[in-house]
Length: 215
Image (cartoon, rainbow, N blue to C red; front, side, top):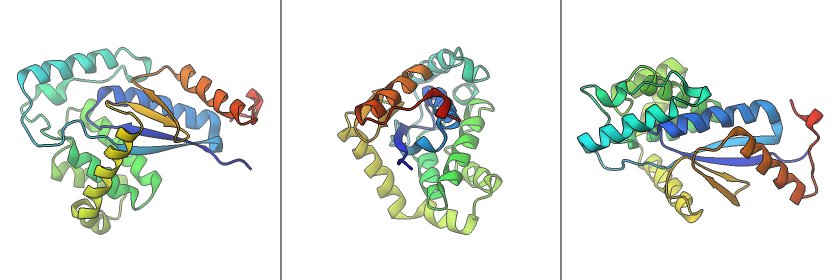
C-alpha cells in the first residue's frame, strides 16, 4: 500500500480564507481516503497582542465577506471583528491546536473545526483562555493534559518552528498548502486545482490513480 501524500496546511484560525481552504481539504480527504493526509501547521498572522485598528477591522470584515461568497462558507459572519471583544492575537488558538495535537491528530482537527465555527459563525473571541478551555472540553479532550500543554514552553516553540518551516517553503501568507513537502500552493484555491496537483504528483512518480480507485 502506498504512503499517503502529505498536504501540509499552514493556517491561522483568525483567517476567513483558511476556513474556505479547510473545507476543501476536508473534501479532498473524503474523496481520496487513505491516499492523502492533511496536517495542520500554525502560521500566526497576529503574533503580539494588540487591539486591532479600525482599518484592520474593516479589512477583516471585507475578507470575511469575500470568503462568505464561496459555496462552502456561506454562513460566515463578521461579528467576530464588529463586536466589543475582537481578538488581539491569533497565537492563543494556535497554541491550543498544538496542545490538542499532542493528544491526537483527530482531536486537533475537531478542535480546529470548533474554533472556526465559534469565531466565524457565532462571533466568539477564540483568543480568550476561558473560551479555549470551554471548546477543548466540548471537543472531548483530556483537560488536565490539555491545560498543561497549553502553557508549556515546548508548545510555543512548536508554533514558532511551524512558522519558520512555512517561511522555508516560501510561505508569506495563509492559507498555504505544501504538497508532499515540495510543492507550495498559496492562497485560496479551487478544489479542482488541488485534485490536479495531486494527480500530477502521482504521475511524476509513476503512480497514476484511476478515478474509480477513489472513495
